[in-house]
Length: 288
Ligand SMILES: C[S@@+](CC[C@H](N)C(=O)[O-])C[C@H]1O[C@@H](n2cnc3c(N)ncnc32)[C@H](O)[C@@H]1O
Image (cartoon, rainbow, N blue to C red; front, side):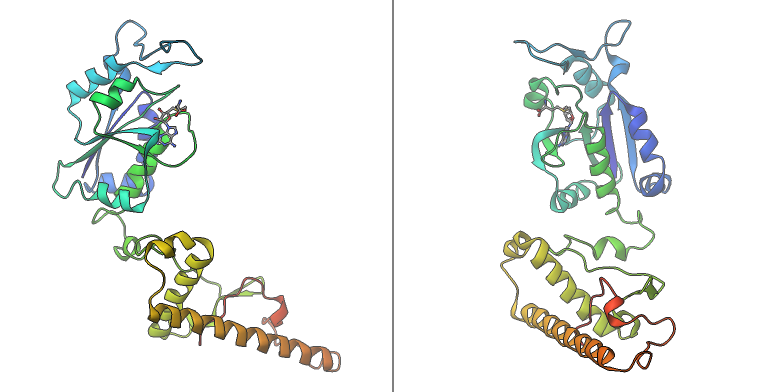
């Protein structure tokens, strides 16, 4: 896929996009990222790209001339999107749409980065094909926003990630947040990973992950659950199951602690390396 980025700070883009996942995608030929300096065709000895706003006011505005000259000269991939707080909000669905713009080599899209107080409105009205925002916040320029888009799109391109499953099994891909992830050691500073993950039972692990993704999304992003029309009967059962398992485990832990308190001192010490249940923080019990 080809992505053109038009900016007055090409080094910012090149620096980030030369390393890590985006750099690897470029090196592998999966991503053809072309960065164009809006100053290179700007007029005058100072290659000025901005001017003060008509009607007065603070700051400067990017002039239309250098932008149109660059678009004419480099013929960036269409559609061209202006990064702007007033644009369409970028979420995973927009990212997937953008990734779908370049199934063939040479196909893709372009990103135009604003700076200062923004870009002359005639660029938005007559030159670009749309506007994208990365959220209700104001950056100093479009470069970081462009990199957000480039990285999110690049990791969806076939061959960009080492593990092809990584992009398919992630937050938002199914309208849900992802389940919690753990790695070694199984017990760290007394915090144990959920025992189901050590069971080796792939079916149970898959059910637990699904239940956790549903529960986490219900707790943190009920809007996402509402957008998919609530939970199906099967999903509700799964969530009920995990809540029941948690309640059972909490009751068991409470009984254990009660037993420890009642037992003579030293009689109920946990085995070496295994902390008492009350010492474990942040553990997510398994649904069974
Ligand atoms: C300081 S901002 C201009 C803000 C503008 N005066 C306003 O109030 O909407 C300069 C540039 O940063 C980029 N930018 C800032 N916030 C952004 C966002 N949330 N999403 C995308 N681009 C953004 C745009 O390219 C914008 O032209």
